[in-house]
Image 1 (tube, rainbow, N blue to C red):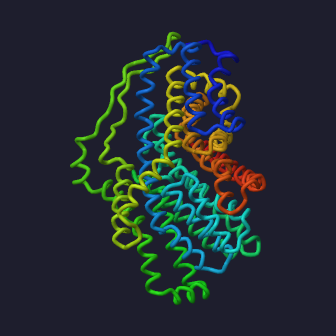
Image 2 (cartoon, rainbow, N blue to C red):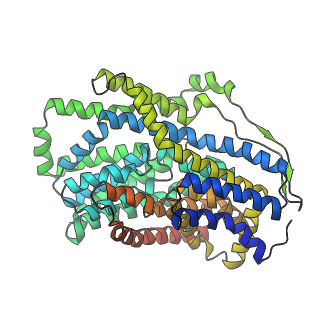
Image 3 (cartoon, one colour):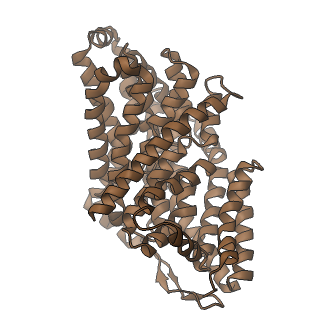
Length: 519
């Protein structure tokens, strides 16, 4: 093992500093910055940490399979989003919600919290803010407040959103199972859902309407948090945000239906053809949830495809300093039962369904596929290269060196509060909880072991901090501002989001601290 001193620790830290500087100071995209950082990391690992050519070769193979697990979901989610976008289903749902109530606080709940959370569950990638912010503006909110509300509202759902891609990344880079990671992750994110909702109704309705909207906020938060926990801890983390958000929207609809005269009158005015349109708009999402449940719980289907699961055996690898990565077998990979495949099937069936209802034509499938490819390409390269960087750092003991250094600075008592801020830093800089989990997942795991804390709890804090930190990421804010005419005026929005996001992250840290004290 290489002797740990300040120089070696700084070398181990260099890949993380490099990717952050390239993306923020030089303004490189994630794909370009990730590829360059990956190359530099390989050189550092070879020259200073004794990584052999054989070790580097195997990191390429591992990076490919770890990335593929995540990318299949991202590709499927993007394809489904493009289908529903072309068909106009998202716009139909959004416009219905915007007309449902006259209360600014309730509009905030529907358009700034629940609808963006639903969109985050389905696709993410900045889509919740880009779609919800213009709807909030059309409902009478200022452009700045609209972007801030939509950004905060979906933050709790980022980890299990995008069909669980950030959670899959966390499992991939740490080698830990969903059964182990999901409980604490769902608890911290469930608590965060409440504080995201409270922030939204305060921003939307002010003190005047806060108390009026509080009962609905509390009840809705319970649906979101309990639903997320039950789904995530029972193997259905792919829909752990989507399904609770759908149920919450339905509950909110029933709530205002019975407690608001305005809403009752509006619903009575809706024509039958508009009701049919709304029903058709919801079909792709109902279809997705149904398929995921069938593929996960219908034994004949699982037994039919079970023989096609494959795994890979990796040999023991070591550096010239004697740092050993034991021989291991990768987790089983089954293309036929993979969530990404199920999402893609639901997208294709949704296309056929919407085509039959005259919302799409046959020629558009090629355009949709091409749009999905273009929008996913840079993200795919970024994830592959950053996963490659993380794998090299792990196998060359660089992550271990970093963890030892951090454990010497922060005590067991303080680290639970610090942990979410580390995740938030990665997400703020890279614009992605995915990337934050890649950069810091193993670091947090190693540090938790060294300071004798629950690994599952600290990794939950990492990805919760990454989720809440991503809402103030400049890349997402710029996208949101561009849709409401605030291009070039993002500074004010980022300033507000940093304030609210920091409070949310601190609260996550405090709950992590409380839980760690109980364990």
